[in-house]
Image 1 (cartoon, protein in one colour):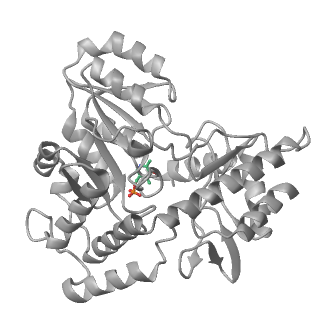
Image 2: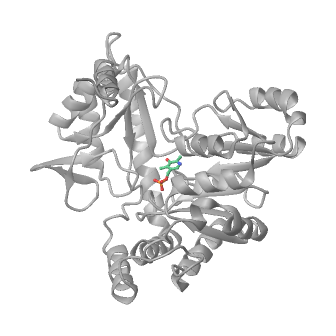
Length: 393
Ligand SMILES: *Cc1c(COP(=O)(O)O)cnc(C)c1O
């Protein structure tokens, strides 16, 4: 007998056929540059824990102390019973790092984008979004009801053309871009985007998920690295990547943050960040500001891996599945592959060689690729092992 749910197994079959099927792999033990999959130790090039803080004992101690003092849950929305002084401490620490008036923390980066975009624009407005933006930006734009158009990746001329045609037909306009593109590793042309925003009376929201703690002289992120500190814009980011915790934030002008506390549904109607996550993030921000050597080590590792991969690709035979390295200015390094089937096969071979990394396939990205992320806590030996694994492919 057929049921109303049969289409689900049919859809899954189609996903399998295209080699697009994804599943989870259970890692055991602490996060770090080496992870354990079952009883096998693998060098980890798949983590967003760029500074190696998710397993840092100081974050764990801060989280445990917060649980002892305030329990495991924050028990309600921040506007009802869920607000704690440490939430404010965290928001002020973020604002200090970012050099903004204020900040607001959400339960995740995804929710920060969803709530912020739908608070800033509505059905009379226009959203222009880089073609490679993160899913949470696109979902936020769709949920807002605004007219959503995308512009070619990093293409300021295309953005300008769209503004010339579309801007005057809408009330407000919001430009959305990742600062570091999460599946490519390159940066957005932020100064040019902000100039266009000024010329066409637009707001700009940047997603600093992969920039915070990683880029810029003080670790403030892509906005700092691209020389745009102090310019008007909305900066969102996450506490879950270089900061080793969980949660999202928006930093900006005092009026913007106060407006979001009143109008962002994913902040108003959800439970406040847990005491443990909040305390861990505060401890991480302190480390970002007081231990710049972690960032130095991260960038040393990025430059080492990037140049060794380039040397390897320069001598790769013509039939090699490793096609080219995608342009990158971040700890995210991608090598393009011919197709999804090759991607899965290469990931499995690298895993046999003791290396854990991600393959990213359509529909997430247009072309299949090996995606490697570098950590401050990788040793030269870890990087050499990865490069040897790639050489054998
Ligand atoms: C991870 C990520 C997010 C979502 O952040 P979470 O805190 O994990 O929900 C948003 N934007 C980008 C670019 C990301 O990479």
